[in-house]
Structure formats: structure tokens, C-alpha cells
Length: 47
Image (cartoon, rainbow, N blue to C red; front, side, top):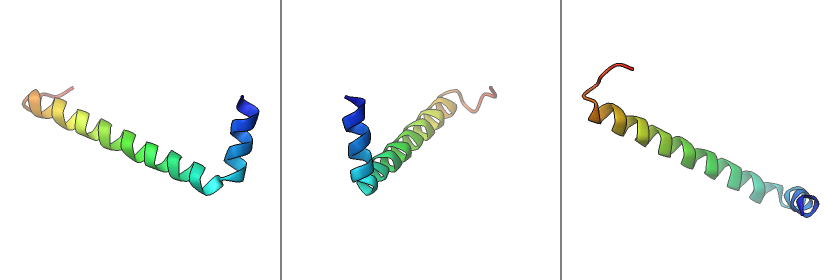
């Protein structure tokens, strides 16, 4: 299973990296919103 996945990644590097980058940006966006929400709800309490 992993062999075919690795082969696909080498055959489609641009698509593979696009998925990785979009996933990373999505994670950063989600975590920044989460932190912003937590800090906002705690009235700026220091961690």
C-alpha cells in the first residue's frame, strides 16, 4: 500500500507538495484561531 503511495508522490510531486502546503496553512490558520479564541475568552490572562 505504501509503495504505491510513494510512487504516486514521485509521479505527481507538484500535486503532492500542494496538498502538504495547503494542509500546513490550514493547520496554522486553525491553531492561530484557536489561540486567538482562548486568549480572547480568558480576558488576556497570562499563561
